[in-house]
Amino acid sequence: MLVLLDPFSADFMLRALIGGSLCAAVCAVVGTWVVIRGMAFLGEAMAHGMLPGVALATLSGLPVVLGAAASAIVMSLGVSILTRRGRLSHDTSIGLFFVGMLAAGVIIISHSRSFATDATAILFGDVLAISGNDLWLLGAALLVTITVAAGFHRAFVALVFDRRVAHVMGLRPRTAQLLLVGLVTLAVVASYQAVGALLVIGLLLAPAVAAAAWTTRIPGTMVLAAGIGALAVFCGLLLSWYLGTAAGASIALSAIASAALSTLLRGLTRRRPSPASVPRTTSRPSAASQEDLRADA
Image (cartoon, rainbow, N blue to C red; front, side, top):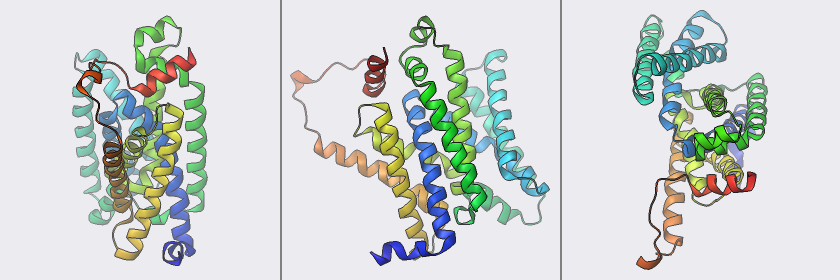
């Protein structure tokens, strides 16, 4: 037991654990909707797209969170404009814009004398440098995320099920979509320092995927994903402590491993249905979204 707890007697490790767990909770709530709604590419684009703002903030001495938030907002607006006025598909707009933002960020970083150090910190994060003020910011981000997710839960479920249904029910699907994008932006920005721009998508997706294998309701998936994400943070920090590996990458790898292990275990415990009992596959939302829609209706 001492082997597991001894590393967290150091203040910086304890702050990393608490901060990483808060990030995991934010990502669990948002990541559940990202997986159900099929917004993984948008989440990855947001993670890459905030690089210019982070780079400018780092070089100018401004708060990194402000730079990341500003860049993510520009990314969201740019994709929206390209989609509506450029006659491009949503995925194409995201792909073009996030590559452009990523390239601009690298160009900005290249003007720094400590290019390698700044690039490493921006791309892979520094969870071990989380401060007390960062913990308060992460706590506030979690509170906002839970409040929005709870307040617009019914609208989000209807949006996943069918935009037309959401419109008929007076749930404003366009507003719900904008709020979902806003939550993705908040999760990416909040988790940036813990795992960096490149690895944040792992913490956003993997725990939600791992939890979805065992749950049938969206709130249950979020709670379980938060627990799995916190466990991934714990295991990643232990790996970093004893093996001398990068903390952010270790956390992301632990999260991915949890998704793979969960899928494997679920496959082993699930009985193979007989051919007669296999339902025909149709294009429809997951069981979780349908269950919640019926419960909310």
